[in-house]
Structures are given as structure tokens and as C-alpha cells.
Amino acid sequence: MAEAASYEIPTSVLETLVASGRRLVLDRRGSTVWEVETQQGRYAVKLGHPIKATSEWEAQEWTALAPAREGAILQQLDRGNVSYGEWEHGTWNVQPWHQGDSLYDLWQPHRAEGASSEPDLGEALSCAEAVAALHAAGWAHGDIQPAHLIISDEGTALIDLALAQGGDIPTAYDFSYRGCLVHYESPEISRSVLETGTATPTMTADVYALGASLFISATGLRHVAYPDDASRKDQRQAIVDGPHRPVNVPGVLGKLIEAMLSPDPADRPTSAEVCKELSSGH
Image (tube, rainbow, N blue to C red; front, side, top):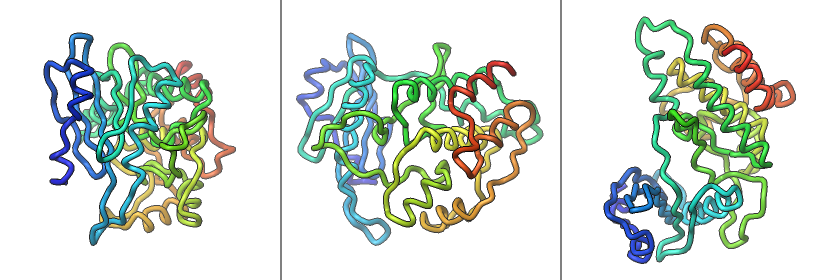
């Protein structure tokens, strides 16, 4: 979006970081992300701003608050050198940069024509461990998707915690949860958003989202079939109506994904149980 492209990092933030270089990483509706080089290492700088109403989108104010909300959560989780504050269009945060490949990018070879090998269980386990660690700390993520699972030799970083729930959030930066990227929503989250406009992130919904993330990364298919141009309302209705696509991932991982995508939250394994199953099959 051209408007967001003009948003540079506030001078006060750059001066605090003593930045030696920066690179625009993401420029989308309501959010701009920069990778910044400093003497202390690399950082991600996120800028949030409101989304103005267009012929296609309703106005959304919460996007301006998301970086500060995430910053408050990351500080509670003690995720390294994190800071956040306000700028003229919304809020910002600074957090350590996570180097690696997203789950979707890493598993691209498994989606190639003729590919039949089972994805690496160790990589799947690393993703599950990142989710389980967050759950053990008492938080539900609320926005698990392949792009938020960054895998490296050191393990998997679970990023983008702006929608997480589980601790105290400064009132000035809090906002209602309106669902996430619909491709990874569980039926109960989609149903709640359709009926009330909001939902509550849960650990069981996170497990479903992780299952959907593993499935699409291994196969290239969304967990529920709907047209690419379907509205969000129609996408959510398809998820509520079900069923999910047949899980055609081979081996231990396929059976586990099937359980994680259960329409009944009570029938899904916990994130810790997912780790245990992957560890025994690894």
C-alpha cells in the first residue's frame, strides 16, 4: 500500500538504536517492519498505524496499537532487549531480529511435483516446542501461521505476538481479538467471529492453527477448501461448516495433523502432547 511505504522509522527510535543501516522488510495495511543493523546486533522495528476505510476495507484503528501491545507481551516473556512507545501515527516496538526460514519456505521441496518424502519431524517438533513453550508460560498466541514460525539451527522462533492473550496488557494498547489469518482459524474461532465479531484466543485453537500450518506447508493446500476470491465471511463459514480436507501427509506427521485438526477442541492434543508424539516418532 503506497501510503504505508512512506512511513520511516521515527528519528528518536533510530537515534536510540544508533542504527548503522536499515532495510524495509514488510509494508502492508496497518504495519511497516524494518530490519535495523546496530553495533549490538540486528533488530526488527515495527510501526503501526490505523487503516483508513476504502471501497474494499473498513477502517481499523487497532493496527496502530498492535506494536505496543506486542512489545508489552514480549517484555513480560523476557524476550531479549525489547522496547515500545508511541509515534505520530500509532505505536512502535523494537525487538531482536530472528534469522531463519519460515516453515512454509523451508518445506517448499515437499510441495514440488513428484515429491513424496515425509517432511522432517525434527523441524515439525521444533515448531511445536516453540508453541508449547509459549503455552507453558500461560499465553495463547492467537495468530499462528507458517510465516510466524522462523526456523534456524538454533531452533524455532515464534514471532508476531501482538494478538496473544494470557497476561496483563496496558489498557491504552489493548483491543479486541477479531480472529487472525483465516486460513489457520479453528472452527470455534471462525464461528465466534461470525456470530459476535470477536473471539478469544485459546491454546486449543493454537494447536489447530499449528496443524493447519504444518498441513499447508507440506502440501500447499489450505485445511479447508474455498475459492481464492471468497470473502472473509465466506471463508469463515466454510471452516465452520467443514469438513477439513483429507490429510494426505505420510507417516506420523499426517496422523498427528489429523488429530490437531479435530473440529472439537476437546479432541485435539495439547501442544505438549504434540511435542511428545513428534519426539517419539523422530
